[in-house]
Image (tube, rainbow, N blue to C red; front, side, top):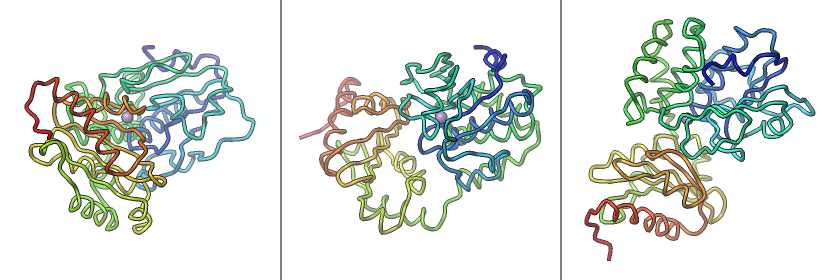
Length: 325
Ligand SMILES: [Mn+2]
């Protein structure tokens, strides 16, 4: 696919859907595409489905029109997923996807094998929002669309610091900026700003973090009772695993939080050559080489032990000396 218009011919009803626990790129890409279709293909009755309306993204156009519940019995001509790496990660719109006349998947996860009729997956591009830019006509990108795509790009590149940032990323960000939105506010308020609670939780996780594999991996964790104590939701933990990754000398960082008793959600970040996507995939998860996640069972000790073994497989491949008695 070269242009999103290719899949819109003859379509009367369309739905756009993001993934479970939507992040900045999910909001940015889904809203960007929604606003673009609404503006330039007004004959199409388009709806947008996201699992929740995260207040931090309320500055985005169309935010109030997000549907958080599937509409009963509605059958769409077309369902487009953005930033969704596999069928089981389609959130509220999974039924709508299965009954749609045609399905399109726009994504950038290397682990995505293509679950739609039309799959446009660019594993080497840093964000789904950047992939989407390539499917739009630049002169038709309005300020609200630009704001959404820019939001997605800064979130998935860590404000252009991760290695998934390319010269194209910077060029596209520059093009988007020309529409004149308040980029400084977007970066500060949607990416860096933390609530007092989020800072408290991060402080605690950092203080209690542990070093593994002779200081080459750092791990932080929150047990169920800690999550309950802070009344924390997963979004409150954003940024912690990235902060851990900045620890001098580590190859990777790990953050665990207990979703249910002895069931942990695992986030992984690589600080170097380690492919954490491979580690996550081994445990049934997915993601990218530098950022990935999975779900694992057991105690904190069990989970970290199993993760360490898989990380070690790669560290050994690098031929680096690791002291693991
Ligand atoms: Mn993404």
